[in-house]
Length: 91
Image (cartoon, rainbow, N blue to C red; front, side, top):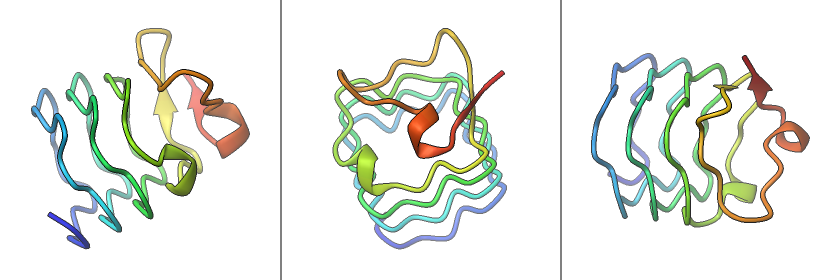
């Protein structure tokens, strides 16, 4: 799925475990309860997306764009990743 444009897509509850999401545009996408554990996010754009889901063990989240991305207390991030530093908003 590398370099796809999924702007505004509703991917709620989608299983994307281990998916290659390199350079994928997910601006404003709804990924609530999506399973992204182990997905490669290098260069992905998730500005304004709803990411209340599981990103544990995902690859290269520090290379993705998370500006104004919404997450909550149940969102799982890779160990040591600080979503606030990358522009994500806890809602």
